[in-house]
Amino acid sequence: MCVRRFRVLVPVSVLWLGCLALLSGCGGAGPGTNFVAKNEPWRKAEENSCLSAGAVHRTVFVQPHSALGGPSVCGSEHPFEMSAAMGGRVLMKPAALLRCPMIPSVDEWVANVVEPAARFHFGRSIAELKVAASYSCRPMNHVDGARLSEHGYANALDISAFTLTDGHVVTVKGGWYGDGRERAFLRTVHDGTCKYFTTVLGPNYDANHRDHFHMDLARHGRDGLRRICK
Image 1 (cartoon, rainbow, N blue to C red):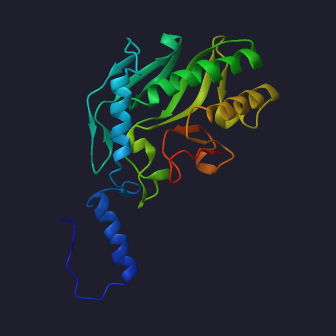
Image 2 (image 1 turned 135 degrees about the vertical axis):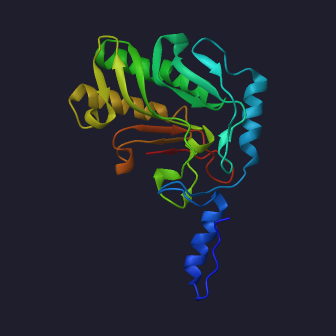
């Protein structure tokens, strides 16, 4: 255990921070590895419902992955590895590890938002998405002691760049304030993403998201139906 005995009085605030660390484990963990988390039944229920409904169509580009588990409540019992969307037409590099409900949302987002935006603004199709992050057991924004990120549940995806079929690469970091077409394309994609995910964060949100779009299927509000799009 990582509990030490002291003979001096410890301030209440310090004890509280220690309790937070115990919720997620302690010891030799480095910065940004301790988090606060709780078991939320809706997550398993949604995953099971998705699996039962056959919402994920298994192909060479979407394959079942071994269970992701721990520490704490991190992981997914039945995740998938997604290496491409739209039946293989749009590659995802590196492949993303995601829970069941995320797979159809990503596929529909690429087909109904990203591809049409690319055709409209550039006259080209999308060839590849650069995956900045998918499953990662860590606190939000890598801040020690913060709430567990949706990435920790394999319930989030970060995209940092879009490659067109002619080889042109549009990065979120460079294009958000870049030339007219790139700016328009990225804003069209950002706004459209909000129709398929409950949380969407981009460069206008904060400095942590200046170089990528974050999207997840977290529940917000008492009824779980509120959306966050920034």
